[in-house]
Length: 390
Ligand code: RFL
Ligand code: PHB
Image (cartoon, rainbow, N blue to C red; front, side, top):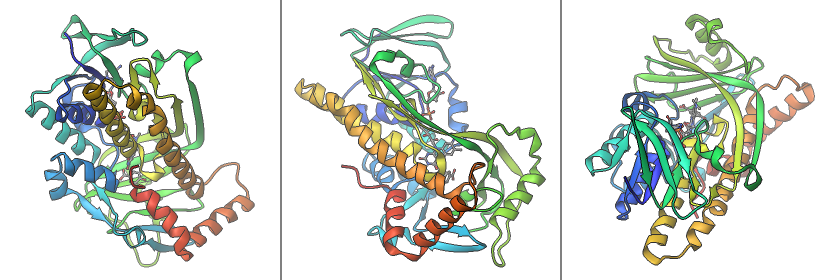
């Protein structure tokens, strides 16, 4: 088999890259370890930046997003028992976020790829990324028990934080920059109407909590927990009680309902520099991870593949290497902006075991400044809805 661009991973990054390349007349093959059903049901992100929505519209993939996505123009910050609204759209010239589940983005992209003749192989085993330091890179993998080789011009490593692509970069040619946080998020998806029209980010002495949603009948909620917390210690009634305590304010009450899904996610910041080695380009979570407090991971993956698709298109049209050479630095500028924002939101809103009253008062002072100063609120708002792509 041969293709122009071999893509490892059918998450949002891999599928969107494949579709953008198709629209520019470039052939690609996507190989994915999991089944299509698994990938389309994996519950993860829910917040799409303005730039992500604009791109999906531009390429004609936003019909369902425009029908079912929920446009949000503000978020609530809850601390000291009171909520304060950050009017994001008013502060950013009308930009907004859209609530639309990542699994729906993945379903829409998969359908679009398959409808346009795209080749996506699911349930592929033992993917090996080979010879990317030469002019003849290839993937080796097993599909339906058969050993297969896929020759290509370039490999895109879109296989997430636990994929194989990143490990192909020799240690001498890359740096891994990272931070672990002393907590994790316990997340639930519940079949119950959201208890608030907008997202609520809560700073509480018992730990951070987040009220989010997926639709008028599905809520998504998170609690800060210990990094090594065992899900078995969290029966549903304990989760609801804790959410009720941390999110309490005024006469507000939390709607409870059947829990459809629950999981614990460790919190980590991570960047691999550069995002390229030879003919291998890393994109999305394969290259960087942000803690979810800023709601940025999926959006950053979309930005990477937009830059990569443009660079590959330019290369195939002109023969020039310039855009490919600029790929890593172009992406890393936004990656670090988003790392800083995600780290800042995380640091401001969580309880750190090592903090004393001094740091806690700094956090509260920062929150009060944010809700009292349009300048401070604008800084949060423009990062949250997503700074314009450059
Ligand atoms: P993905 O989605 O992990 O996809 C990678 C794909 O590669 C496959 N794969 C392999 N395939 C073949 N061979 C191998 N050896 C392979 N190894 C892995 C995997 O099966 C998978 O299908 O990475 P991608 O495409 O870069 O997308 C990144 C996003 O998934 C991620 O950044 C977001 O989910 C992060 N995130 C959020 N991002 C946002 O923008 N907004 C949010 O509101 C938001 N909330 C979240 C989040 C992530 C969370 N968790 C669970 C980590 C909330 C949570 C709780
Ligand atoms: C979500 O709805 O899953 C979500 C929302 C906001 C975040 C993270 C996750 O910051």
